[in-house]
Image 1 (cartoon, one colour):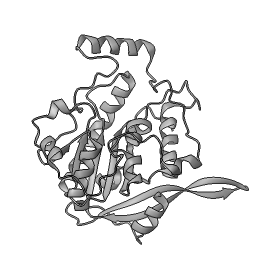
Image 2 (cartoon, rainbow, N blue to C red):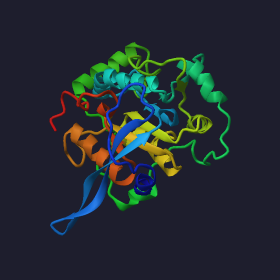
Image 3 (cartoon, rainbow, N blue to C red):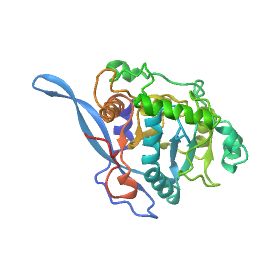
Image 4 (cartoon, rainbow, N blue to C red):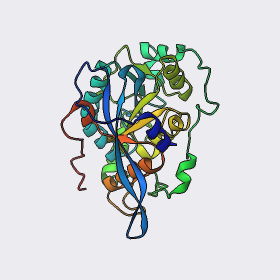
Length: 300
């Protein structure tokens, strides 16, 4: 589906620099398309320039929780969050709708204007029948092989550090298995934003505001970012122009599992899978300039 989506929606001739107040958002969308090398079929990166109207664009912040059961996952959220907040602030300033989606944390925002706004959005006439549930695969993915083994949950923490983290969570009164209570507070929520962890509510907001373009960032790429009711698969399947901001995300992948690569390479493999079979990707420097983000420990 994403190849047709590229051809129909994103054909442009050039990528213009992005400045505050521009009426159009200039992006470079990367997918991976079938090619041939040495008589063997491979997937090669293909970039296509696109221009989106900020008014018709939303940013969905997926599950950037205040803490996590994995110690290393928490450390990576802490590292990426300041840059992510810069991206969100710039997008908001350009007129994009910001949707904060920290799943299972809605009690913390019961009095937030954005929570009421999400619940009050009128029911969309084209509400997909399955938009309220997880999506574990779309048909295009059946053409390939899922690139990592995540059956162990993907925690890559040192056992000693992980046990310390577990005990700290217990001391805080948190359940070690699902300790999150809110979104990480480095990511600022404004009163004009939307707060929801419901696929139905998010879809209703998008339709009510005539939003066809969606940028998704947050964690974790191979789980919530792909599978949530407001995640990549559901939005692609139901016809939205959706992209992943590939440097503003992380995976739950343990290098002790197949294909036995380092954690950051595991993230790259998931991004490649998405670019092949799900949706295009972009990077944060296309919004705020500078260089694309890279974790300090990433050796790739």
